[in-house]
Image 1 (cartoon, rainbow, N blue to C red):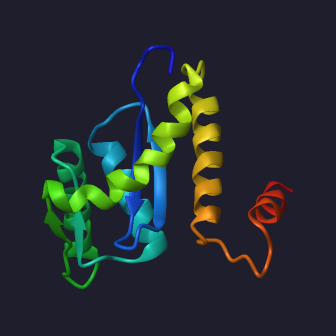
Image 2: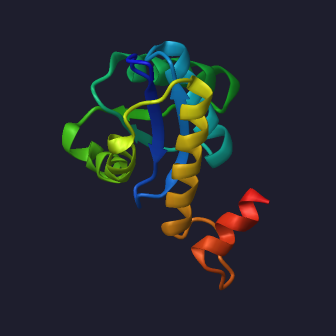
Image 3: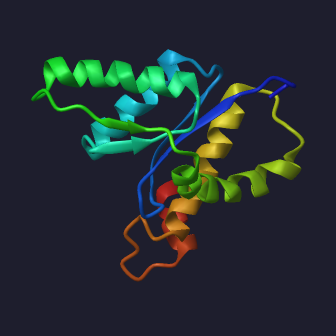
Length: 146
């Protein structure tokens, strides 16, 4: 975006289904904590999470674990930083890079967020995550847009 980096946080389950995504201007503790809290709030507390070697992701999960420890039933999330286990997320991330690569950049943060939200929604429809009831992907997308 205007020559500056923006960061896309994505939460994907073991089966490759997209749980949540968040675009942030910074890769820091508050952004990582925000995405983990959103994903856990909508999908429940997992037993373990696999992340990359980012210090921000680790700090964000440690903050969420601290909150869970004192507000929940004392249960915490096991954090695993194993490069080979992160392949499910990276494999699912390829489609986004393939689409946004030729786009030559964006001018405003809100246009990046809107475009990525549309791309992610279309990909979730293609993966069958949104109930189709016999409808085609185009019909589902048209119904969501209406």
